[in-house]
Every structure is written in structure tokens, then in C-alpha cells.
Length: 409
Image (cartoon, rainbow, N blue to C red; front, side):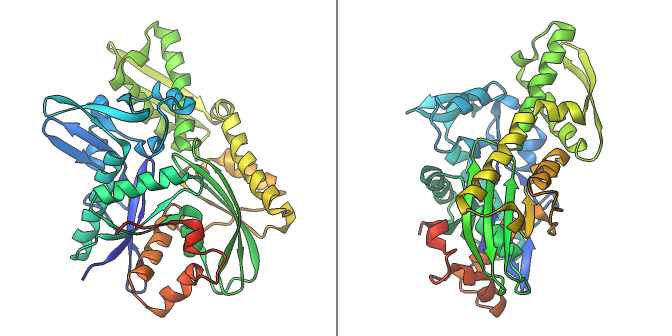
């Protein structure tokens, strides 16, 4: 029997889930983790994917690819892409005005497309699911950000085809989250959903009826804003600090930049729970140790305009919908970057100090919704599945033709 899986193909990490035993099961990878780094590395005559690629990234930065989702359907001359290239240890080149990654593999320099990189991540997730279920798992639903263009959606479809998947549906992240959040005990309510992941921002206004069925009232987003941009602000600041103190430009060493990037990611996470983060890297460059600290207030200052951009998207959603802020019943944050206290405070303040609604495992809401849709499209017809997926009927304003693109057979 062929099982259907839901995939959250993320910029920094990805997840795969299946509907089983009347509930969503997020599948552990071979490392025992519920998420897999969206990393691919080329080492001699081998390709590494996921944790294996991530774990050797500092030693092999030029041939370890990450953030490939942010490269989909971009022009190589895109100003945002060009700006990000200064912090990217691997080499990006133009191929027919599209970005391609130059890596060394089997003693040759080769070019790989973002779609090819993501296809390896998707194939790895598929293998993880098949190992868990003991069955073929080629049928898949993949979620994409609401702010993705048609070209980016089609690029995702290409990656799925290269991975050998039978793509049942591409759905938008807010729909997937709405399915996971849906509850028949809900009274009529308006919910503002803010999803800030590593690579993109989505803001959506959803109207739930008493049966838990949702209508998308308005959406907005920014495919050039994500947690990685907060990391890059911190990275640029610390690179300048190192250069000013030691007179050496760390940007000339890909391995040093990679080590500092990972330190910035850890510091950002630390600052979500502490007011100070310590950065201590032995022999960062030319035998020079780098020890410093960053305060939460300094981090917030460095990223002030990024926080403002989140509020701009929320305001755009509210203006498009013509809904007053006080009419919102719940404000739900999903995505790893919404753990940043400053962001939580600003979103709450925008809605008049309204407490933010907590949902179980917010990082897994998207993959849970994708798994629910996958089970429905694969004709797993439990009553609970059909109720949850009543969102997908033609009579519902939040139907699949509105939110997604038809899959590839």
C-alpha cells in the first residue's frame, strides 16, 4: 500500500508527517529528530543530506548548500539575493539569469540548481517516511509560503518531480496551519495568523465558523524576510567587531564565516530566553580567538527595521480585509522566529496588548496540516479526516484551487 505524506519544506529545516491511528504523526529521522536540516553537501564522491550535511558544514563550507529555498525562481541580479551572497560561503553564479550553485564533486566543478538541491532534501524526507511506515510513500502534499509566486510554486513542483514524488497537491502554509488549528468547538471568530520562518513571512486573517471551518479573508507576506535575515544582521555586526579589534577581514575565510554564522544562530536563540548571549570561538581566524557578548537590546536595535517589516505585513492584511484590530479574537504565531520576545511584544501591542494564543508545537502546525490534506487526497476516509478537510470542498471559500496548484502526476 502506498501511503501519503505531508511535507513542510523549510528554508532552514524540513519536516515530514503522516496521518496514522486517527492523528498526525510527525516522523523522526534517523538521528531521532522531528526536523531535518535543509542542507545538502558534496564530499568527494558522496552527497550528504540533512543532519549529515549540517554536521560537516563548518569544515566544508564551500560545498555545503543551505537556504536553497530562498533561491527558487529568483533572478541572479535580484538585489536581495546579491545582498545575501556576501554572507553565503558557497559560490553562486548566474545561469540563464537564474542562480546556480558551484560545488566541487568527484574532482570536478559542477553547477546545481536550487531545485536539484531541494529534490535531494525531499527524497531524504521520503526515505525517512518509508523507513518509519515500512511502505512506499511517494504520494505527497508539500506546503509553500503564501507569499510564494507562481514561479516559485512551479519550481517547488519541479523539485518534487526530480525527487520521484507523486505530488498530490501544493498548498499554502496558512491553509495547512488552519487545518491543524481547526476545532469544531470554536465559536465564530477571526484569527490573525503570523508565520515567520527562517526564509519567509506570511500574515493571514482567517475567519472560523462554529464548525471549525475557515475562510481566508486576506493574506500578505514577504518572501525576502525571515529569521535568516536576523542572523545576517548579527553576523555583519560581529564581523565588523572582529575586523575592528584584530585588523583582519573575516569575510575572506568561508570556514570562519560559517563558524560565526552558527554562533549567531545560537546567540539569537539564547536571546529569546536570556538578556545576554556569550559568543566564544576558539581560533576563528589565523589562530585568533574571538570572545564577545551580545545583549538582547543590541540585537533588537540591529534588527529594528526587520521587526517593523513584520508589522507592515500585518497592517496590510488588516487594511485589505477592512477589519478593525479590536475585532480580532485570536492572534496566533507560528514559525521558529516568532519566539523572539521583541516580535511577540510588537505584535501584541499592535492588537492593543492582546495576549498571544499558544498552540501545541507551533513549528509543526504546517506539516500537520499538510499530512491531513495528504491523507484526504489519498482516500484515507476516516470521518475525522473528512471533517477537517471540508476546507477543501468546492463550497468552501478556502478551497484548494484558491490556495494551491494542481500536483504533478
